[in-house]
Amino acid sequence: MNQKVYDSYIKILNKELIPALGCTEPIAIAYAAAKAREVLGKFPEQVVSTCSGNIVKNVKGVVVPATGGLRGIEAATLIGAVGGDPARELEVLTSVTDEDRAKVRELLEKKICHVKLSENKAKLHIIVEMTAGTDSALVEIMHTHTNIIRIEKNGQVLMQEKAGDEEDDDDENIYQLLNLDDIVAFANEVKLGDVADLLKRQVEYNSKIAEVGLTETYGANVGKTLVENYGKSFEVMARALPAAGSDARMGGCELPVVINSGSGNQGMTVSLPVVALAKEMGASEEQLLRALCVSNLTAAYEKRDIGRLSAYCGAISAGAAAGAGMMYLKGGSVSEIGNVVLCTIGNVGGVLCDGAKSSCAAKIASAVDAALLAIHLTEKNRTFGSGEGLVKDTLAETVAAISTVAREGMQVTDDVILHVMVGC
Image 1 (cartoon, rainbow, N blue to C red):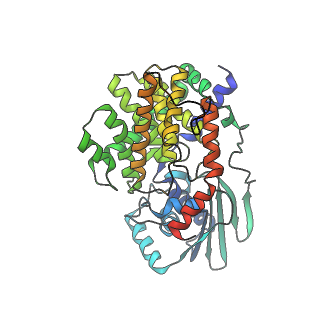
Image 2 (cartoon, rainbow, N blue to C red):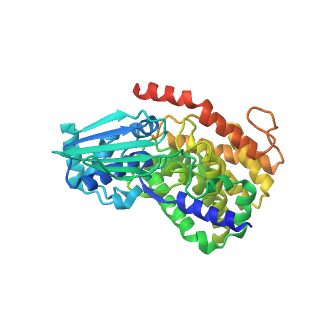
Image 3 (cartoon, one colour):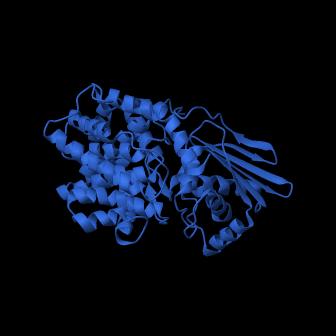
């Protein structure tokens, strides 16, 4: 295949498949706070966290890891300031101690942290400001969870980058090169040495947290409920594994996952159903890794024009991508793989994102269930017809249509969801 496309896809996988400890929105706040504390050089007396609506929405209902069960922006900010290691980025809270947790609870009582709603139009926007005596520090993040665009100390700008738009990419807009034909060609041709470490880590990390979700009590225990009621067949485990991982992750489990599109829930959803099918089929490690190339890149393709945060539930695009990976593992053609994605998003596309929380696990199970149905339809040479709702002549046109609805049509929906949830 074209070398530029090959290199770009390797770069995309390296950018997307990174480990993160805990739900990425509170972790991004903790990362900004840890960095601001480092810049300040001392512990702050007052802290202000200014966050975009989608950050507020995704932090409100989820347990911040390493806090002992605390929720909310204040907890995420303070745990980052007290015990965070900014060098670890999305694993910023790895080294938090019991003393740090106790300190955070004390500071919450003192109310040193204040929260403001960002007026910036960016979906992902965080500013953490700290003061101690006459000293101050500021760290600003925009568009992606670790993308620091501004650092200030005592009013002096130490670092500033152009914010740009979310779709801007320093690497010649490499995400615009994503399309299903090239994704499948890449999966067929990629040198495993270029991707094996990334993908094996994804399987290892995500499988481990899923097992915790199946055996321990977190959230609504969606994954455990599926197994208890329906057994351990492949089609149950394809839904139960990512759901159980989400149960644990949303409930504050302190195990890392490998994310996709900035989301741990999406990272588990694109990978664990494919892992379940590989086990069912007795597939080789090589077959599994190539199928994971398809699922991970298809997810990035679907999310490219939707954006990382929106009112459109990311579990749906991730479930469709898992369907693509599973169809590839079954030996499906490009056309068949595309039909699985089309039938999945044509079925459940448009499910609302009302923040990160325990019910994300149920949405993941529903998304994977829709993908499994799409596989069965495809295997019987059945599909949804062009012109039926948002379904178009091709997958590319259908993905574009869904993206337009998610990005433009659901903007007001997103605002109303935030207003209903938190009164903003």
